[in-house]
Structure formats: structure tokens, C-alpha cells
Image 1: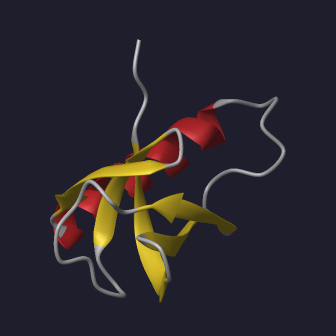
Image 2: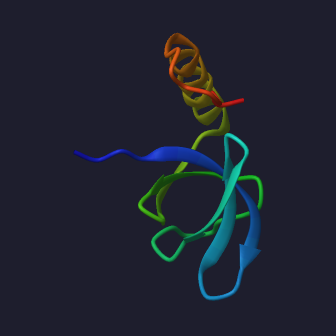
Length: 81
């Protein structure tokens, strides 16, 4: 099973890496598999690698659905913003 999440690029780094943000969490990932990444782009991220770009409206909709699901789970102390 594969789980990939949309994440927004906040900075481009050396060596085909970028800093991303999702739900207030920041992480450095590899962007070697995706062409022409820019700050502000949304990427599909799986285990530390960007595997594709995502339309911003689609990314926002997906993140909103994640936030709704988190609110349904009473054991989740910090749902996505």
C-alpha cells in the first residue's frame, strides 16, 4: 500500500532537494524525480521523494479533506490546519 500526500514547497535547496510544509510540519525531501519545481508548487510526496506535481486547487481540496477526517477522529490531538 502506498500513501502519498500533497505538500507545498517553501524553499529550494541544493542537490535536488526542497523544504516542504504540510499541516505545519516542515521536512526536506528529494525533488530529483520532478522537473521544474518552484517555491509555492504543490508536490505529491511519498517517503521523502516528490513523485509528481499537483494542481493547487486539487491540493487544497485534498488537504481540506484530510482536515475533515482528522476532526472525526477524537484520538487525534492535532488535526491538519
